[in-house]
Length: 193
Image (cartoon, rainbow, N blue to C red; front, side, top):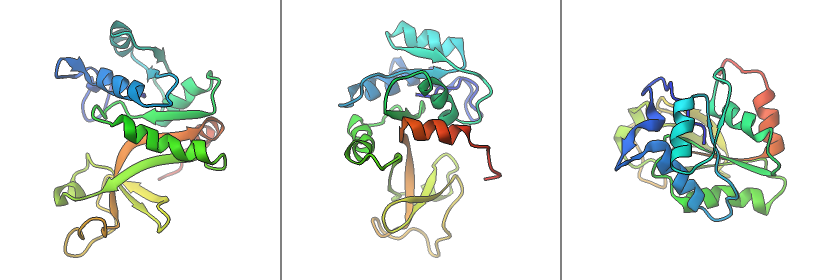
C-alpha cells in the first residue's frame, strides 16, 4: 500500500480519520481480508504514517521520498521481498473490496505469461466524466487498458452511453504485478506522458 503523506490534493491523506480509523488502516484491513494475500505492507516515506500503521498492528516500510509514483514506492519495497506477485493497493481506497483484490490476483495466478493486472468498472455517473478525482481508462475490445487520464477520455458526444455500452470506464486504484515485471517497469525512464 503506497501511502505518501504529502499528497498534492490532500496533505496527510493516509492519516485522515474515517469512522474512527485512519484511511490507511481501512485500506490495510481490507487488503489483509483478501484470500491469497500472504502479507500486507505499507510503503511510506513518512515516519508519522509508519508509526500509525505500527500502532494498529500493521507492517510499514520507509521508502525514499523522491519517488515519482506509488508504483515506484511499491517497487522499492518489492525489491527486498521474495515473492512472485506484488499488489499495489492505493492508500486512498478505503472501500476497496477484498473480492476485487482477489480478482486482480487471479489472472496472474492462472497464467504465468500475464505480467500485470488492474481493475476498472463501468462509469455510470455522468458527473464522474469531468471529475479530475476520478481516473478514467479506455480499454480495447479484449479489456486491455489503452490509456488512463483524469481528463474526460475519449470524447463522447451527447454524454455517457448506458453501461455496459460506454467505452469509458472508471479505474480502481489497484494493480497486480509479476514482481520481475514491476522491478523492470519502475527502472524504466519516465516519458513525457
